[in-house]
Length: 242
Ligand code: ADP
Ligand code: C5P
Image (tube, rainbow, N blue to C red; front, side, top):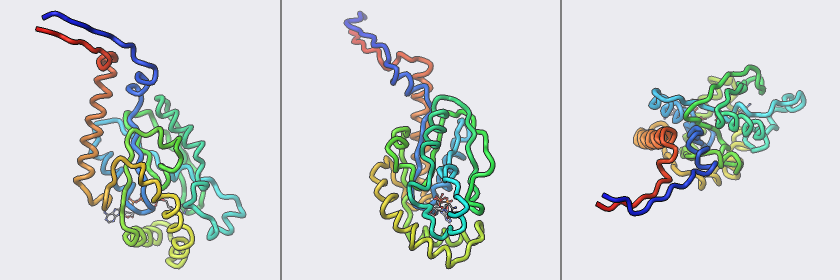
């Protein structure tokens, strides 16, 4: 056969960067919707890959003495409750293959105390109620998942979790829910559902959705690997005639 025409384009810097960088998945949804459960299931199924989970909770601003003394008036569900600049800085380092120290947030003392070392990975999962709120954070993501669970189920799970794990009183939980959690879900979280590529109804109970997501991630990782080995593969355009 003879080669009739061919052209080889040099990959642009952004194309080469795209295939050298980790695959970033964002997982948003209301509090107690099952985000962490879904992430744990994805991580478990991708056990043969280098995967790291980053929680938006780690970037809660520490409370001042005064804020702590009146914690019932503090809105933990507003975008301003998070240090998004620090989150962007951490994500930028991870995307460029640098190890980072991520704070661990303590829901009882309302502050970050210890740090955990996170090494660079092939897949980064960023999970949190408001991870789709800031466009700069959204732009980092290759795949966006919204966990969609009914409000009554979220509230029931929250009561169960916060009474047992956070030693909170049921009256305090219900006051916080009606004063801050529900309004913030309606004003800030639900409007970000439109940015999702995939919406998972029923969270961790939805095994079919999780299997499909994992299959898609594996396909994408395969494409990343191929393009790392053959960086010019996808930019060679040739026409052959036998
Ligand atoms: P989120 O990360 O959205 O806050 P979690 O995954 O931590 O949600 O789940 C919130 C609470 O609900 C946890 O206590 C968890 O054990 C429980 N939970 C999550 N998914 C289910 C489910 N499918 N069935 C029953 N309980 C669940
Ligand atoms: O894990 P999840 O996504 O549920 O975490 C977000 C929730 O944690 C928010 O609804 C917020 O009200 C709650 N929160 C809290 N106390 C804190 C920090 C966050 O109740 N100190």
